[in-house]
Length: 153
Image: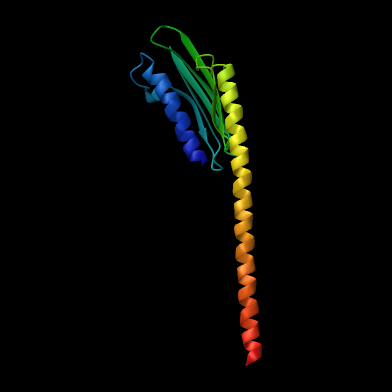
């Protein structure tokens, strides 16, 4: 995934969280506290409003790190820290939902699926290997036939 896409996703998520949940209607341009952009792609920016703020930094390798916070409609402070790089966008926040723990049935189903998947992968490797050998054998026999025909002339 390109860094431009990662940055766009980061910006959209931050924008939606900041402005979708906040009472602020717009971000005036004079509230941009700090911004620097360098020719090698590095940048740093931040802004702060009464109920929200954001800080973001991109290094020369394309890794974007930052944080944003806002007060949601219920009056609760929400804070998110994030990293975005070749491994994707990774937000960290107590406000994000947590995956539920697996039940015994889910754990059993996962084990059965993985066993099936591994068996299927082995089977397909064998089939592909047999087909490759069959193709190579057929190709070699065609060469043998053509060389014997040349010898007959």
